Image (cartoon, rainbow, N blue to C red; front, side):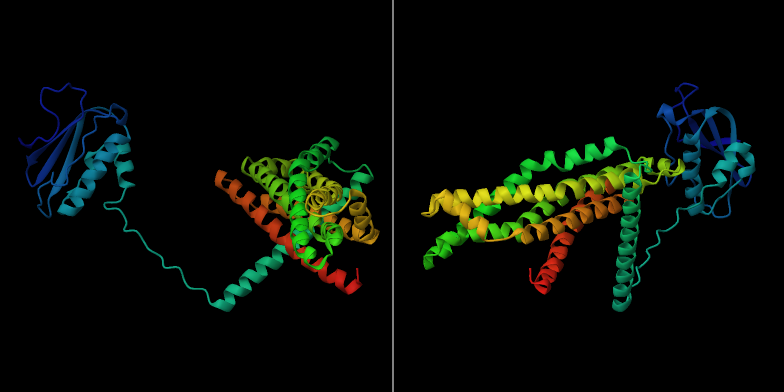
Length: 386
């Protein structure tokens, strides 16, 4: 037996260094392995692609008596050898390897599988429309069922049979109400000021500047206060609800509640929805007053109107029915934002990226839904003559 090729480390290396060499035998090639073949040493050699002679029909056997210790580092080296031998047309005599080593190596293919590129089939247009329509109707049904469960939980709370904690309701109400006063006040003040400025510029042309107070009052009470407050709450509170519930979904806290027999609709969703239903009418009133204040500041500075005159014109421009209509809209907006945000959080994935996706989706759905519902209310108001 003669040494044919020595591609391992130099001969003066320590006995523990992983080494290999090829020796000629009759009608076969012998690979001799020695040293410690462990990945943590960082000394595992790489078998070269031209390390075997291209002799189709040849055989390669192994001698591993010199291997002191090994792990997956040796398997990775043998896998490189296995692929090179496959390309060179040389068969490996696996029976000359120790049992564990042979079993691990046999699990690995001789060559990596070629990546399979699947071309996504094109969905017909009508099928895509039908699929999205069914999915949308399914979501409407799920949200409706969630609303029914929440209403049932509210009744059980009144009868003191619910598992909703009062501390959760108070915490959600504080977050959705007092903590939102600043942003709601700033936005509605600016909206009222903008309406007064635009109205003053146009109405002064007809010597009707006194009606700026009526313009601001009616606009804020009927539309702007309720809609702008709902949009703010959809972006601020609705996104927070979706992110919180999706985070609990990723941490398997929702699964833990289900295991203990606690319904998430009662324990999590009910306090969130109730807090918005309770606070939205008060935020609507607050938005109306702040918006009128913004219009008052602009009108006094631009027009020859007294404070008493502005106040009188504002009070006489609309009745209590307008406030009731705005009250109803704000309650519906609050329930819609709470239910959709919690639903989006419940169906979110379990990764960190899904939390951001759920929060973004809750904000978008909340804003678009609020505007769509407001359009429905506008049609209802026209039919009822409000």
